[in-house]
Length: 441
Image 1: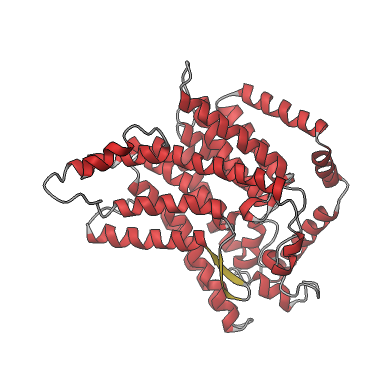
Image 2 (image 1 turned 45 degrees about the horizontal axis):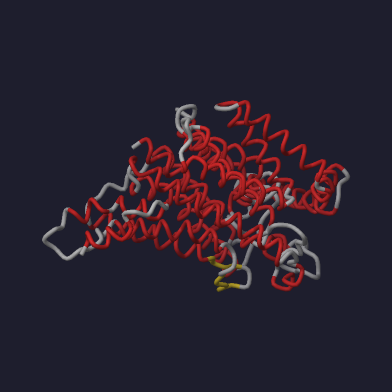
């Protein structure tokens, strides 16, 4: 039975088929048993579902508080973590935790929880409780990196990269189709979304986060292409196709923060691997700037201090004002929405700030405002250890090169958008980090 099932897909060349062939060796070891999937294989299927959930984005949301919601990504990520831990303990499999990364993640989570305990003195318990729930989101997303590193064998990393890029290609195409058939989000402002028009906002319903997701997919695809050996194979051209579609979708978001993140990523890749790529990308970007009026208007608007720039500066000012009042321990993790409402920093039209009301247009400023300078130091330590763990051999490994470019670019991007806490962005980020950890195993 196992062989028959395998035979049906043995001639397929897609990434999903590659993963199926990878599990065939396990089935051969059970010739005298009914064909069954090893218990730990369930984790792999859940990881595939995690990647797939990024394409769904924000379209499926479970709102259980007026100001709190879970996306499909949150649910699947949490299920993956729980199933992995249970099976690992049951089967006595090593959790393969990298202490240099796991310890600061746990320390930050515990410290953030402590700030929420202190926040009870200044905010209603229900608000603090709702805020604390998102610590589980943060930890569950970080833990995905360890699940990937413990589940994916070094020999099968390429298969997982190909699968990730397949979802990336779908995501890019969906975004382009959205711009053609559904270019206006203004009708959904009543549900808390910003009124984006004539921009790719895809299933994230936000062009800034969508733009950076495309940057991640571009980084992985172009790094794999740069490491390809001539003569190129079909798969190498596939990497180039994903990179091109991701670039087109990125440009059509007209997201200035994503443009900056893209240039930062290209600078890293160019410096480490291919200066020619940096020149080509810069030329393409400049050409599009001269040819696309909407792109010109967006970039020039940043220097003329347009409405978006003004709103961003006001967000920074609010974050700084809150930080100055609570510099050591902050207001409590994820309590920023309630603090702004308490201090009358929202408009009458949106008393709780909509979907973006819980954050600042700078992830690091948000961490400082809600967990204080101590929390900021712990948070930066976590990402410093992440960078140090992936930068080794970045000149010789495409996944490490893509991870380095992504770390640098996400820090640029997160100074203008709260991308370090957006669930789909964080899933892609930590999944990529997990692949680099698996490569070192």
